[in-house]
Image (cartoon, rainbow, N blue to C red; front, side, top):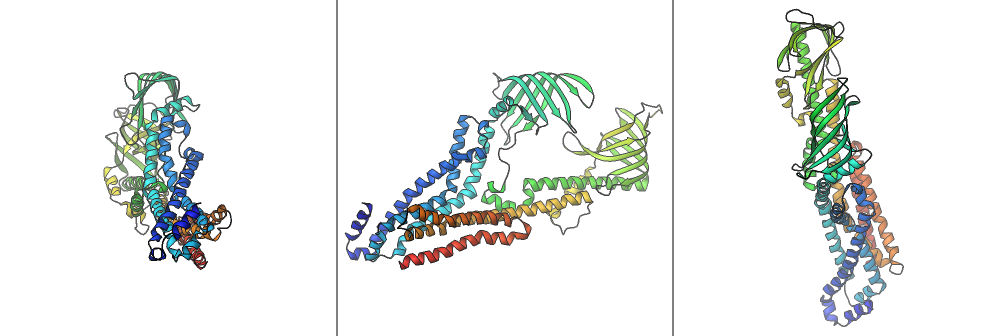
Length: 554
């Protein structure tokens, strides 16, 4: 019936109107309307299938969200998957629509009326342009923004997540897993909705190495701070009895604070979640990427330690002693002989004579051997630590012998601010520039090499992502036209045959895109990967040319 309506509408017009072009916009609108209905239905169906068929569970742990959060997540995820299914929906709609029109001999009627068949391909051209734009905009701006919305939705329900962890066998984990809390019961504080009270608590804290303390408490109050971009959890322990492994003793505290712990993002920063502007910014400044900046920070810390050890060893070798700062007071270190480790520059001293204030008493400590290393304080800042061993003796300033010990550990030795300022003067670009000379010991050199490699790998990954996104979006231009042409050629067979044949180039484009992106991330195969990404689209374009030529001849 639809074919009869099409033909009757066509032949009811005078030849002058048809040939003159008045009928052409009507036919193009008719084809566009038929394609549009199929396109919308296919896109919606595929979006729901992908989102509900495992896409949501792959992104977010369902058991960690409430029903209301789940609905909000679905409202974000369904459109996200919908944008990725647009090329498939456009390909299917073009194949089905043009296959049906050709099977009903409607193109034959148009040719008999003197209409140029090539002009009837305007609707798939416009649809492919629209899909290309929507796909590129979505994967470059919309989806990265939606991922951030997903992260905020999950983090907004942090109270529920904490409750689920308290119910689980693993219980609540804080401070990156260093603290684990077990409780018999918990409830929200009536006076403060941002506070949760835990009763009958067991508390375990891990140290280095192994556990540091464990104990029980009558109550723990957990506080939720949702003001910052990353929510934090802190708390206070009441009536806390615990065993301290370092002190080898049981301790009772009426009140003890739990340091604040930030709640990590539900989605770690990934290149594929960056928007277009961020990709270009990170491509020009790879040192700002968290992984690269973390290695650069470690490199700088190693450079600070290197200068600290080198300067200390230089003073010992020239003057036979060195004066440093220990907990705000001077510490004088003398040694008959010293050696520096080749790898990191740490010092090994022989026949040591140290004058310092230890435990509030000015002491003179002697020992046959000592080592000067580093340790981190509570703020994560590196400080020097001197460990004296072998025949350790200590006296006060009056010459009275103090308790004899097998070893003496003097921590809190400050590293000079001048050293830190000098290292801070070295820019990130200078560290990442392998041709820029910086005096480095092997430990710092290894970190610098790692930073350069990670920065290079990241830049290649960003560039491959840019090529991949652009190529995937442009692919709809050639795929939709190929689907329309194949639909006409295979009009006498089942419609799914034409779609199946046209779907093969789509798979080739997708597989080539993925493989090319992986190759482009490797240093030796960058050009090969980019050629593979774009080569598949060029091949489909050539297939378009020959297929459309065949259609035009028929």
